[in-house]
Length: 209
Image (cartoon, rainbow, N blue to C red):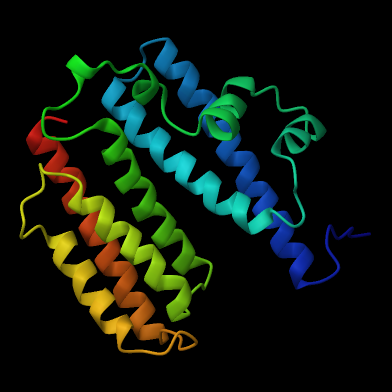
């Protein structure tokens, strides 16, 4: 006899989100251990950790009504991922950002500003995947993205991501708050975000960040 974990679409979505949260916590735990053991470089660690933290924040916001405590989730499933719990729920930033001294930071950009940009990119792309396409949902995300990109002096004034965010913000400003992006517009925005993120990462590599 087949046993179903859910009774309706909402419950199925909740369990799917629980599964993703479980995977994020496990992945973060492995990443923390790999960093401590020098299996990966600080740069690789920071990039991946920022992605996981951003995914975690987006998912936590989605689950806030059904999962008030990430600690309880961790204990319920006997995860034994205390390093991940500290990184995701308490610290909220990579260990490299916590421990980096002023002399080790770029003269043109701070690690925290880079981390902010990464998190804004991931949050915006995750929100589109969650079908958050109303103007009053998308506009603040892109405004935050534009502001964080403008903080980084290592990026050229004509950086692709800056231009695309300005174009989208101008387009959304002409719409009503309750309007929603069409499927085609949402797909194009997601493409522009991914393209801009790849250019952002390439710019950081060129700058030696």
